[in-house]
Image 1 (cartoon, protein in one colour):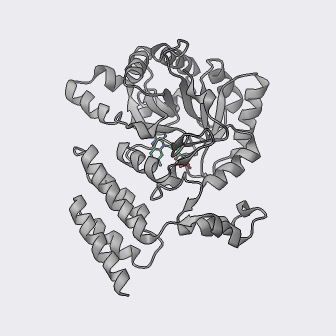
Image 2 (cartoon, rainbow, N blue to C red):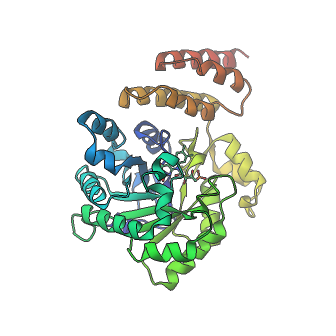
Image 3 (cartoon, rainbow, N blue to C red):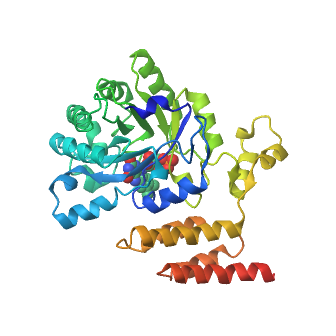
Length: 364
Ligand SMILES: Cc1cc2nc3c(=O)[nH]c(=O)nc-3n(C[C@H](O)[C@H](O)[C@H](O)COP(=O)(O)O)c2cc1C
């Protein structure tokens, strides 16, 4: 079953981000971005990804080690369609891990070929794969085998990568990947060397679509890098011809990102002042959206905190503090509230602090 072929275009998906888009945050996003999609289903992003998981670990780890990794493969029904992201340079491990994800009920398998982290690259994985296309091809073949991609009860395999390693190698790297016919290729429009230091080069996403079309490949192309909102993602699709966009960092502190009619106030300002407003007047832009109040934002942050501890009690609470930096921003008193939250270590403490802050708003 290739669910990708049933999705109306453009497709807007949530990026995998380690220690950010974990099961609790994905569940919050599914809830607060829920809307009726073009195909009549109700949900948040068109597709979600898990954080990346080591296929070597899944195959070789001790039972305790494996249990830890399996925590990154927790998901709930409202997150569907959900894709498990794996990395390894060992085809045998990829096949076994992909089979495991098929058995766990995932809708697809994605292979990470873009991570710049040194500890991942040392294993020949992530962006290091770009330097070894032969190994990359074997890994895709192994994933397809494990995922039974060609069989009726199988699931599709996709790849997420960058433009190149030290330089832009799209003209050679993309055809090499397309030869293995993954269902989807997500292109983070920067090289490994560029990390995230320069703006993503969306002209290269356009070029990737041209290469794909010229090769008569059926692989869908999703562009990735710096998309700020759904409106921005739509504009990027129009400019490049991509089948969709993957959005990453713009989800920080904003589980409403994929809701077409809800918005944080700062996103409205962004839209009004950008060329994305097209011919719409500023009033038209702000009338279209239900604006998320500060109170709702903070209560959702508390709900997120409770869910984090409920689903991932063994994870370090500091993971939540990255989220606080994003939720508690751009409003009067944010600096002080954020500083106070950095000292908290349980949902009860966080809730108490938030309630104290909200009480100051009502008495003002
Ligand atoms: C904190 C963080 C963790 C990330 N973890 C992953 C990951 O596990 N797998 C992956 O393929 N990319 C990962 N990425 C890269 C993002 O998926 C995405 O490609 C990148 O942030 C660019 O998109 P954006 O500009 O929309 O954020 C991560 C990025 C960040 C900021």
